Image 1 (cartoon, helix red, strand yellow):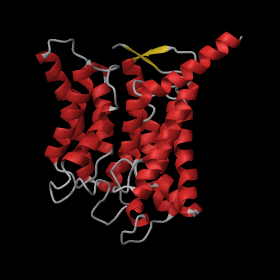
Image 2 (cartoon, rainbow, N blue to C red):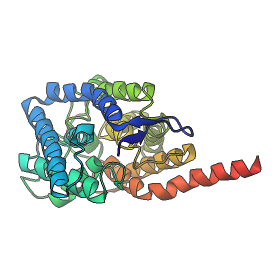
Image 3 (cartoon, rainbow, N blue to C red):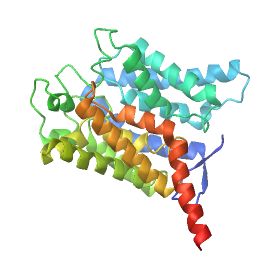
Length: 309
């Protein structure tokens, strides 16, 4: 698939896939640098393994399937990097390999390659690892977003022992969490870049993040806790870089709004009433599956307006 739709709805202007992926890599660069700064060599190794395995998996699959090589479009690099940034330093190398192979071969290539996957490959791989390897490697997968320094902010909000980091630490990334989710400033800079470049539009990330804030405030009744729910966990990373995936998110404006609100509601319900402190990955995955039906809402509204005119 050579072209991806990356523009403001309703006007769709195709861009070369490699150009879009390069913009995504540039946008992810600040978060990647922050991950290595705060988590050190382990983060660098996880990133290298996930990206390398993703590239190799797509290369080998295309050879075995006798398909045209697509590793040059950089989509496998983006998938591997996103998966790595969603992992903690507790994971093992073989878990990184398994997750990367699953993301590329099962979620992406088996469905026909880029543009045909039903769900976001990186999100699907993270959820698979979380569910499949709960009790493996000392329970590393159950503490996906924890590091050696202690519980994450969301775990503390959920009742775990520990002291919440300062707001400054939450913004710059000096706290526990998956290696790519902790530095809110780096992620927001990447999001602004993508909006300026028209790779994504503002609706999904802004409504998703705003929805989580308002729902957390409604459920928790505390404005500071609501802020921690926004800055903690993988919400910002997921809202900007994965919920906006052009293949697995709605194309119409109304569909994007419904999609984002659905993500926000599921995220907050899991965080407050589920067994996991984090809910963003599950929320995006579920809304990916519902995306074709959500997009129908926007299509029907547009058709109704055309008839009315």
